[in-house]
Image 1 (cartoon, rainbow, N blue to C red):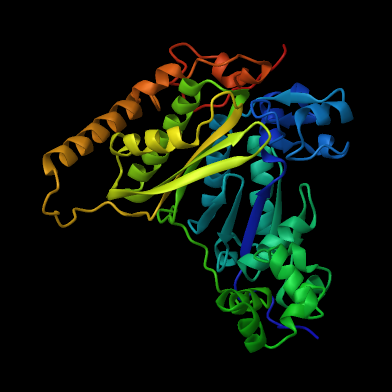
Image 2 (tube, rainbow, N blue to C red):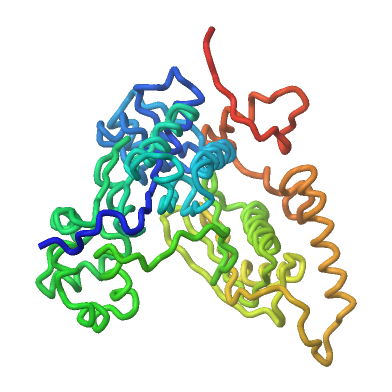
Length: 432
């Protein structure tokens, strides 16, 4: 039986980029359209595969050597996250032409609350979502899949239903038909362990889940179970949030090397660069951290890490650097090839003026804040990491490989552009 007979008491659309990174590359390089394209050359592992590559069995996370064996004509490109971000911004700008109620869920997907806009645009919610989808394709030359329904959970399920460049609208009176065709592992919020738990309860589809009583869902899964039960039945629990995310439990930065290395100075320099990047993000959101974790990953993917507490919460890498050095020396093993370093900052809190401790060196703390402020101002003007820790001098002490190739946008500079400063404009590569 229908769960509700109300077609759209609330209309939420979800737009999801189709193979976003690869699609952006094909948009910038029209000659690549119709060809199998993957990004992730710098990692040695596929970050994104075009649908032409997926049709040949090439998927995200596959090692490049294996992908090239499967598809000898594969076009392998280094990831150009700067350009992907520009396309992402333009995609969300198109959505905001229709409503300010836009949530940037990730770089290539977002939610749009269309409720009440039928009167303004004189069209149905389906036509309005279609128009946004078509505008993105016409202006950016990339495709997105769209889902439209009564809640965020249903809209996200609907956008995944027909890919690529699909459109699925699930009205209230059709929710039960849609959920009947949705297996548990496709539900946003159901992880592998939850799916196993529900399967042991005799459930196979999302409809089986919502047909159980709400109290049963809450008793089995707690608050998240009750929320998802309502979302899947078309009762919106999660609102479209327009504010940029500014609250974090942790902040982490990880960097994989283009070639494994045993060079102590180079590995430590990479770790310090992770530290700087993590603290830059903290300061951008006016946060500070009290716990610091360091991890080193070997060539055979074994990872070892250590965690320590700082004497006080801070947003300055200069204050945390001595502790990072101590943890690094305890983890590093001479002669071992390492492929990645990671920094995780925990116990994150708002960076506000706190009560002074009795033996606190307030002068030094204020100097560290001033240094960080100057670094941020200089880097904002001249490019990220223009001012950085001295250990960055060792970043070039590693073996160059084909994976060190820079994205095309960083090599084809416009007049006046530098390696650290470029106009926020994507470029097309056309053969005339």
